[in-house]
Image 1 (cartoon, rainbow, N blue to C red):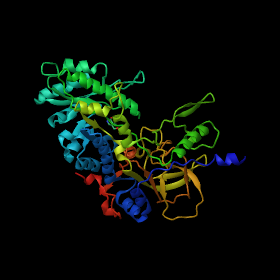
Image 2: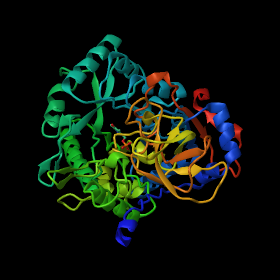
Image 3: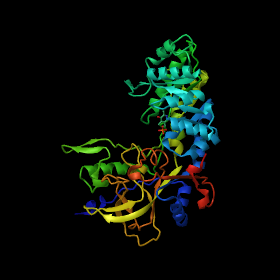
Image 4: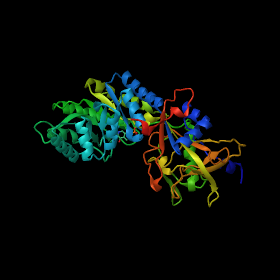
Length: 483
Ligand SMILES: *Cc1c(COP(=O)(O)O)cnc(C)c1O
């Protein structure tokens, strides 16, 4: 109709932060072809040196605050063994959330005192394995205490335990969680039930744990102070708290540009309201919806752009003050309590990419361009409504820059196997065999919901040291060969 109409048809971009090693892989078409010939599609590549750098950045903050500390890599965020081996090599611990995660970490050689089990459901095999190896079990409820105590009796061993706490108070509200003991009753519970003359006489109390949903530093700061309070009360009853574990959920920043992020959110709302052309598959709202002509809801994706993230996010928690103006870090030192943390996603920042080959191009029944990839939706999926980063598309043969837009679709026989819900702007229509690289996928995206429907093989996981100048095919280690 007019110039405004033209302008609002332009798709918003979401430029990812891209580590140099990712560009190096993206620029090497010969290498990509060799990788696909050897491993098939899709392939996940992991940069072990980046992982180590992320660990060191957290350690720097903890050291600067002069805290006794131990970082546990929350391995549920990624399935690769190579990362567990790297965690071991750097001297940090591993947070395990299942029997197999614990078993594998023990097999890789992670020391017992560097392991913790925070599994939400702990079956007999897991409890046995943890007790036999003196691995701390983080207890969630009374039934679990009883199960652990009974199995410890059978094994004629003591179980080393911490207690997960939840229901913290923040800004006048109690924070909901399905996990853990309530902050108001956990102290009494431990005093009444744990100890040589109590029901759970073979549970050895070592510390307290929490892991909060969401990404608020003030909620975590409050939770840490309230947990410190519990530790003080327990100390007066002769329970010494050796550690407080503040869990994970440290924010990560995926995107280059805050303005792009804000523009995207505005344009998504405009599109859902019908005020511009759709920017998502079938105009999906990703959390926004129109009800009786009014826009409702909130963006249901991970907050991909963040100014405070990683080490700085930790710093805000440690510097959080209570009513007496004492920082959490100060109180931890005052009580000689070791600070533990369990970052998963944020330790994997800039650590991984997912590469897939283009299988076909077509138009759907609405005329939209679909680009079929040799992968499926479960290989790039998190609990977030969409992965909001522009992918890199490597054209084996560059042609004229024609400008086109379309959607990437996967191999599952579901209408909803659309790998990114966002419509993506491309320089040219990809050819069959061109390569699409999804950036920064190591935290949850590549593995957490991966399934083997249709009996498709799981994706291949490779790892490497990316500080090298030149990569050859032999630098990529297949994860199944790590032991
Ligand atoms: C998931 C989880 C983590 C890791 O969370 P991230 O968001 O990946 O940092 C740590 N601890 C527990 C108990 C968890 O459930």
